[in-house]
Amino acid sequence: MSDRSSSGPAVALVVAAGSGVRFGADRPKALVELAGRPLVAHAVAALAAGGVVRAVVTVPAGREESFAEALRDAPVPVDLVVGGAERQDSVRLGLARLADARGPILVHDAARPLVPPAVVAAVIDAVRAGADAVVPAVPVADSIRRIAGRTSAVVDRASLRAVQTPQGFAPQALRAGHQHVLDAGLVVTDDAAACEAAGHPVSLVEGSADSLKITTPADLIMAEAILVARG
Ligand SMILES: Nc1ccn([C@@H]2O[C@H](COP(=O)(O)OP(=O)(O)OP(=O)(O)O)[C@@H](O)[C@H]2O)c(=O)n1
Ligand SMILES: C[C@](O)(CO)[C@H](O)COP(=O)(O)O
Image (cartoon, rainbow, N blue to C red; front, side):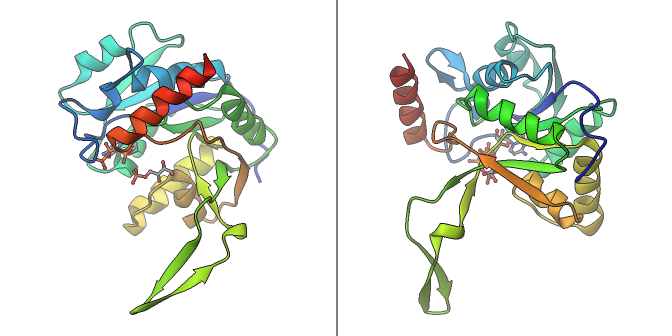
């Protein structure tokens, strides 16, 4: 736990520099439109509605203009930073632009456009309350099996959670986590794992089924249905 995490406004690092190979669009996935608006614009608006006052967005090299256009009407100031080869590289590069951040830093996938503001606010509140690293998570719906050679073994899903973003951090914990990952040559799939590898505890708050990650075109259909249901 940290006692230095609440002394500034909450800011966001939105990772949007992926190409979206599994989605297979004619443009970077974060620029794909959901209800006529790019995913990255939905994501920034959702973070702002939850209490974030500024966003750094990582973008693919050479696509700065398209992203600036997509975020022209963003409700908070946005800085664009060219991302890296892997997600963790993009986070590290974006983090360098947030060297002055003193309050909670929320790292969010542009590919999760429909995170409810209440989840964003819960993450911010948990960091302000002193947590180093906070993850929104949801119970696992499927039965789970672990591969064991040529057979497999059931895993008790009651103790498992599926991890979402935005993940919230005390700034020094997030910086230490990504420095550790870089120094040790580790590969992590999310930022809580980076902090954990550096010795910081990770807290959970309740995530939301609405906050699905758009990975394939089928996910976009699901997101459209969620928007219709929201009215
Ligand atoms: N080098 C990378 C890779 C990913 N991301 C971002 O990290 C988030 C989660 O990644 P994912 O959904 O897997 O996106 P892609 O890497 O673009 O997808 P794919 O693996 O299908 O190419 C996305 O918002 C993506 O833009 C990033 O900023 N920089
Ligand atoms: C950060 C993340 O969305 C948490 O579930 C996930 O780890 C991203 O994984 P991906 O392989 O980059 O899609």
